[in-house]
Image (cartoon, helix red, strand yellow):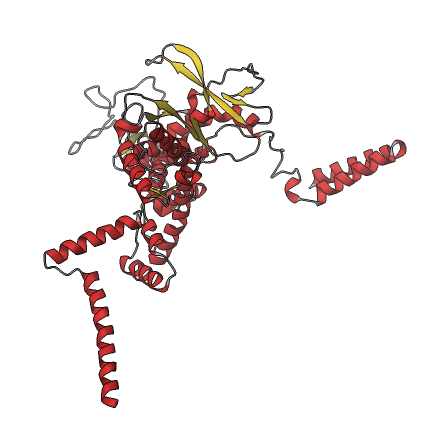
Length: 506
C-alpha cells in the first residue's frame, strides 16, 4: 500500500513536469495511470502479484518448453500411478471395447459391401503397416499419445501386396524435423517441422528418417497434408504445434508422488524399532567407541536379545511423528485436482466410490461421459472420417465396389457413423425403466437407443428376428414375444366382448 502511494505521488510529480511542456502527453499519462489503478484490481502490481507474467505468440512460448514438458509428461506416464489411472480411465471411456462402423448411405447393397470390407480391413494384418495392431489398438495408442505428448501423426502407406493396399503408420511428434529451414523453393515457411504458407495454412510435414537401430540420421522426408493426419489440440490462433495437456499438472503430480514416497518411508520406519544411545555425561571421544565388553558397539537390536551399554548410556527408542493419518484426506484432494482439468471425476480415476450414492455417482458418470464423447467425436471427425474416405476410394480403385452404385463425386457415399462403448449402468432396473418410458413415449427413438448401446439398430432387429424364429422352431416362447402376443390377445378379447355386448343389446 505504501509502495503504491509513493508510486502515485511520483507519477503525479512527473505529470506536472510534462504538463508544462506537453499537456497532451501529461493527460495521456494521467488517464493511463487512472485506468491502471482503478480499472482492474488484477492488473495492479503489489505484494501478491509482484511481476507481470511473460506472454507472447503461442508458438514462441510453446517452442521453448515443448520438449521439456513432453519428457516430464512421459516420465509421469511411466512412473506415476495417478497419471496412469487418468490415462486408463480415458482409454476405457473413449475407446472401450472399440468402434464399430455403420455406413449411412441409402443404398443397402453399398452399405453392406463397404461394412464387410471395413471389418476385414481393420484387423492387425491389414490396416497396420507394421502388422502389429488392429485399428482399435491403434486408436488406443493414438489417444494415449494425444494425452501425454499432446499430438500424434498418422501417415497413409500403400502396400500393393495386400487386398486393400491402404495401411496406417503412426509417428510420434519427436519425428518432426525441427532444424531451421527458413523457406522452401516454393516460398513456404517451415516452422518446427510444419511447412506453412505465408497465411499460416499447413501444406506438408517434414519427418526425420533414421536407420532401424536409430544410430544414423537420414534425409528428412516431406509428407503432404493429403497423405498424413496431424492430431493435436489447437488452443490459440498463433499455435502451430502441440503441447502436452499435462503441462499444468506436472508439478502437482510430482508433489503427490513425493508425498506418497515420504509416507511410505514413514510407515516403514513405524514398522521397525529404532533407537539411539544417549550419554548422561558425554566425554570427548574420537571415532566410533565400543560400548560393550567384547569391544563391539551396539548398532542393531534383535528379538529376544539383551545388550549391555556402558555406564552412563541409555537406549532411547524413536517413534517418528508424521502426517500418515492425513493421507485419506490429502491424497483424494490432490487426485481430484489432477482429474478436474481432464473433465473427469475423482471416482472415475481412483475407482473409489466410498463417498458416493446413486445420484452423485450417476451425475459424475454423466459428466464423465461428456468428456469421453468429446474425445470420441474428435477422433471421429479428424481421424476416422479422413481414413474412411481414403479407404472407400482405395476400394473403388481396386475394383472392390464395382457391383455397387458408388459414385466418387457424391459425398453421400462417404457418410458413416461410428458406434462406441455405451454408458454403463449404475442401477440396471432404474435405467431400464427410464429407457422403456422414453421409447414408449417417443422421447427416444429405437435407433438412438441402439446407438447408445454401441450397436447398429438394424443388427439388433436382425438378431431379435433370428432369436424369435429359432425359439419358435424349438417350441420356446421368448419373454418379449410373449408380452406382444398377450397384449394383442387382450385387444382382441376386448373387441370380442364389445361386439357380443352390442349384439345382446340389439
